[in-house]
Amino acid sequence: MTTKFQEQVYQIVRQIPRGRVMSYQAIAKKLGNKKLARAVGQALNKNPFAPKIPCHRVVYKDGRLGGFKDGLVKKKRILEKEGIKFDPVRKFDVSSAER
Image (cartoon, rainbow, N blue to C red):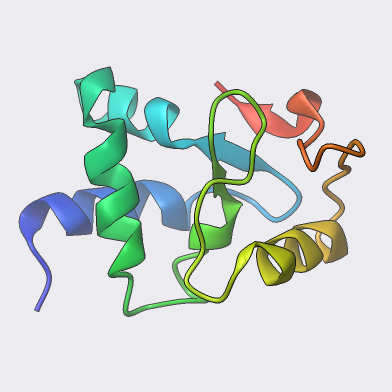
Protein backbone atom coordinates (compact mmCIF):
# COMPACT_ATOMS: atom_id res chain seq x y z
CA MET A 1 0.00 0.00 0.00
CA THR A 2 1.40 3.38 -0.96
CA THR A 3 0.50 6.82 0.32
CA LYS A 4 -0.68 9.67 -1.84
CA PHE A 5 2.67 11.41 -1.30
CA GLN A 6 4.59 8.31 -2.42
CA GLU A 7 2.39 8.02 -5.51
CA GLN A 8 3.13 11.67 -6.37
CA VAL A 9 6.88 11.05 -5.99
CA TYR A 10 6.72 7.87 -8.09
CA GLN A 11 4.78 9.68 -10.82
CA ILE A 12 7.57 12.29 -11.14
CA VAL A 13 10.38 9.73 -10.97
CA ARG A 14 8.68 7.56 -13.60
CA GLN A 15 9.15 10.43 -16.05
CA ILE A 16 12.94 10.75 -15.63
CA PRO A 17 14.32 9.50 -18.95
CA ARG A 18 17.11 6.99 -19.31
CA GLY A 19 20.48 8.75 -19.27
CA ARG A 20 19.23 11.59 -17.05
CA VAL A 21 19.06 12.14 -13.31
CA MET A 22 17.05 14.42 -11.05
CA SER A 23 17.79 15.58 -7.53
CA TYR A 24 15.69 14.82 -4.49
CA GLN A 25 15.27 18.57 -4.09
CA ALA A 26 14.11 19.06 -7.71
CA ILE A 27 11.43 16.44 -7.13
CA ALA A 28 10.44 18.16 -3.88
CA LYS A 29 10.15 21.48 -5.76
CA LYS A 30 7.85 19.83 -8.31
CA LEU A 31 5.74 18.74 -5.35
CA GLY A 32 5.56 22.36 -4.20
CA ASN A 33 8.06 22.45 -1.31
CA LYS A 34 11.83 22.05 -1.70
CA LYS A 35 12.05 21.18 2.01
CA LEU A 36 10.43 17.83 1.23
CA ALA A 37 13.67 16.45 -0.27
CA ARG A 38 14.30 14.09 2.67
CA ALA A 39 10.71 12.84 2.49
CA VAL A 40 11.22 12.16 -1.23
CA GLY A 41 14.21 10.01 -0.31
CA GLN A 42 12.16 8.11 2.25
CA ALA A 43 9.41 7.50 -0.30
CA LEU A 44 11.94 6.16 -2.79
CA ASN A 45 13.46 3.92 -0.13
CA LYS A 46 10.08 2.18 0.02
CA ASN A 47 9.66 1.98 -3.78
CA PRO A 48 7.97 -1.38 -4.48
CA PHE A 49 7.84 -0.72 -8.24
CA ALA A 50 11.54 -0.71 -9.22
CA PRO A 51 12.73 -0.73 -11.94
CA LYS A 52 9.45 0.58 -13.43
CA ILE A 53 9.89 3.54 -11.07
CA PRO A 54 13.62 4.23 -11.68
CA CYS A 55 14.64 5.49 -8.24
CA HIS A 56 18.28 4.92 -9.20
CA ARG A 57 17.98 8.10 -11.31
CA VAL A 58 17.50 10.29 -8.22
CA VAL A 59 20.63 11.87 -6.70
CA TYR A 60 21.70 14.67 -4.39
CA LYS A 61 21.72 18.16 -5.91
CA ASP A 62 25.51 18.43 -5.40
CA GLY A 63 26.20 15.43 -7.62
CA ARG A 64 26.59 12.72 -4.99
CA LEU A 65 24.70 9.51 -5.57
CA GLY A 66 22.46 9.57 -2.51
CA GLY A 67 21.05 6.29 -1.27
CA PHE A 68 20.05 3.04 -2.93
CA LYS A 69 18.65 -0.14 -1.40
CA ASP A 70 21.02 -2.34 -3.41
CA GLY A 71 24.08 -0.23 -2.59
CA LEU A 72 25.84 2.68 -4.23
CA VAL A 73 28.16 0.50 -6.31
CA LYS A 74 25.15 -1.02 -8.06
CA LYS A 75 23.45 2.40 -8.42
CA LYS A 76 26.57 3.81 -10.05
CA ARG A 77 26.88 0.79 -12.36
CA ILE A 78 23.25 1.10 -13.50
CA LEU A 79 23.62 4.83 -14.15
CA GLU A 80 26.84 4.28 -16.10
CA LYS A 81 25.06 1.71 -18.29
CA GLU A 82 22.47 4.40 -18.97
CA GLY A 83 25.20 6.83 -20.07
CA ILE A 84 25.70 8.94 -16.93
CA LYS A 85 29.34 10.04 -16.54
CA PHE A 86 31.05 10.28 -13.16
CA ASP A 87 34.17 12.04 -11.94
CA PRO A 88 36.65 10.25 -9.63
CA VAL A 89 34.70 11.38 -6.54
CA ARG A 90 31.58 9.54 -7.83
CA LYS A 91 29.73 12.69 -8.64
CA PHE A 92 27.67 12.63 -11.78
CA ASP A 93 28.14 15.05 -14.62
CA VAL A 94 25.73 17.84 -13.70
CA SER A 95 24.88 18.33 -17.37
CA SER A 96 22.82 15.13 -17.10
CA ALA A 97 20.73 16.55 -14.27
CA GLU A 98 17.33 18.14 -14.49
CA ARG A 99 17.02 21.08 -12.15
